[in-house]
Image 1 (cartoon, rainbow, N blue to C red):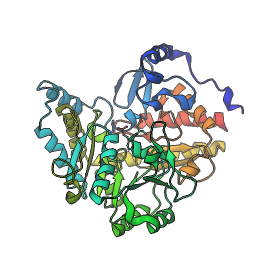
Image 2 (image 1 turned 90 degrees about the vertical axis):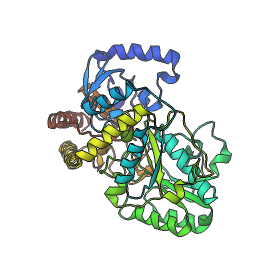
Image 3 (image 1 turned 45 degrees about the horizontal axis):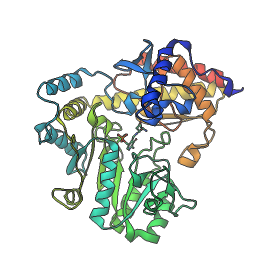
Length: 439
Ligand code: KE4
């Protein structure tokens, strides 16, 4: 089948096309974050008018079941009453003070009470700020420069983390973005995910120069790739042995993969944990926290500077507190969402099998990806062997059936508490049709 010939759009969302042309006159690429431009799926994006529960509605009034959920934050679904009420109430008292407020302490206490290895936590405004600060803290605390990250993991767009893998496993790579001085790359070592030998080699070679290791405990930015059994625990062991800081990036997985995130799901110990997305309930919030003796190196108690005008602002804290509090009071959500994920995974696998389409479905809890490949996907190298032309057809055919997925093979589908059985059945039926097309 010539997959290139598939029409990528239906005619019922032309207002979005016009809106996109207009946006491109004033915003780079017409978007405020690149992945939203739908470049990877060969078409123009939908402009969203509103959302509610598991649904989003474009400016043409079309309804979609939303599996992006603002890339993770909308874990309780859109317009969750308890979150909206909290934000409206906070609004009436003032949007931002630039001074301490009780809501900051409340959210910090919630995070510390839920994540065992977090004694102290600092609020920032995005996941990027959280990981950028965590890296600076690891360097300031250890007095070392080298950071290890993993190929296919994304931790936001700070210079030290926009680095691509080198040719050999333990060789330094180069910048993965223009504008990052090559000199920066020499302090970031990029290793293959799920490869413990590569870590051991790197630490044998330069362990005493390594400030820290940062990892997605379940990768969500190369598509979903779970850690191999014992892999994360091994990294914990090695970093402890060499006095390096172990940074677990839970911006995506935090409070999603369990009431205590991946840390709780895997019984992990980390020195620093970064957060974002769900802790903001849809408002711009990031955070980094960890062991007291490390966190006290952060200004004003220590020499590592970090600051932010709107960090911990009362509106964002109101949204974050409302969402996290609701999760604390309704732990059944985690079992339920596990079952929703298992159902969808099962239905997808059944349909692919029925039509003989080679896919791998990787899932951890409410995070899932469909890779169009016939090899197991355990790292970036195997993920990048997927057939992105087939993904493009999958994405656009699902969209035509009212299913809104992340517009890239290298992203995750996100289930929320708001997705109903009917939503999942409709999604499974839509996927079945796509498999028939792709057989
Ligand atoms: P933000 O700066 O986008 O809030 O967070 C950066 C970040 C850090 N760590 C992890 C594990 C992340 O997944 C992210 C951001 N995730 C992407 C989705 N793959 C955000 C979507 C986008 O870039 O528009």
